[in-house]
Amino acid sequence: QVQLVESGGGLVQPGGSLRLSCAASGIIFRTYAMDWYRQAPGKQRELVASITSGGSTNYVGSVKGRFAISRDDAKNTVYLQMNSLKPEDTAVYYCNAVLVTIIHRYDYWGQGTQVTVSS
Image (cartoon, rainbow, N blue to C red; front, top):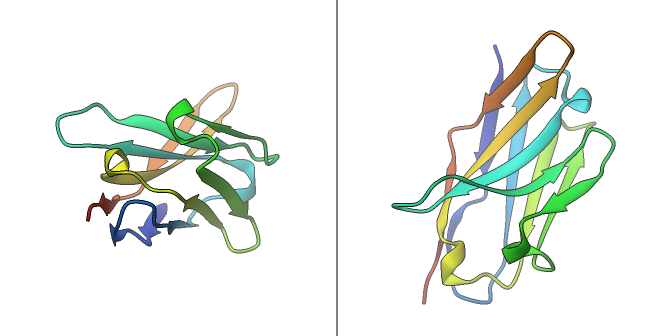
């Protein structure tokens, strides 16, 4: 059974920092690309950051220079370090694991963790 469990969300003041974690089980973690998405109330889910199995990263423009995605394959965990947080970063953050093969796409989601940026 595949599980992705996010943690680290919470309430933080503008300008503050949080680090999200996503612990995976039931998959060969090192072979998966890992993504962080977020969804704010009334808005579509948005891809925030990605990291390939080889460690290459990509970010949506609004978080470049503030957020950093990383992975620890020994711990089956992906992280999202979020600095200089803004109220517009408020959302539920979801972890996503993706593996695309010739014959199948494997796609798994966590349950989400709430991040609220407010004074």
